[in-house]
Image 1: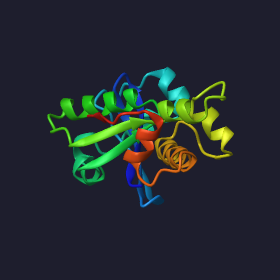
Image 2: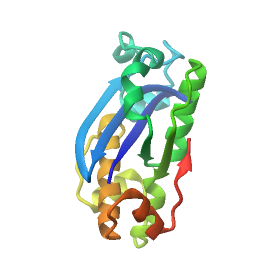
Image 3: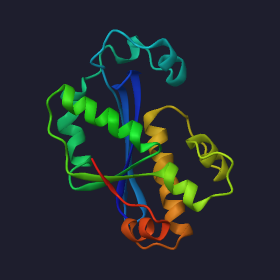
Length: 182
């Protein structure tokens, strides 16, 4: 059971201002980190986004750009399986950041814990990160990338445990979910 959970917070559209990554190896959370990112649209920050995540222009003014962070981030991605809650959003932000800085796409497959939670906990009225986390009694600082990535990883682990899977591939197969390519 090895994968990396990812979450982005954005300054505007697909311009990231924070990334969170949580590494799971053999079913155990090994490391969780987050980095503020000076977005490519700096100094502009969408006021609505700022209200959601609380990250301001001042917070990211001395942060490194995604391009400057990439050498540190890249090992988390290479030949790995990624998971995100609402993966379409996070993969779009990742692709956009890589394209903006003309960086090569890493070789990764990914899946989405929204889809996973819909398959495993069909009775839940909502499958948002907050709702699924509340169901499992996970306490976290929502809309901060590091916490969101860690909770996403925990949701994936709970789901795989629920279907008695030994690894990601088996778990997704039991749920009828196919890995997607970045």
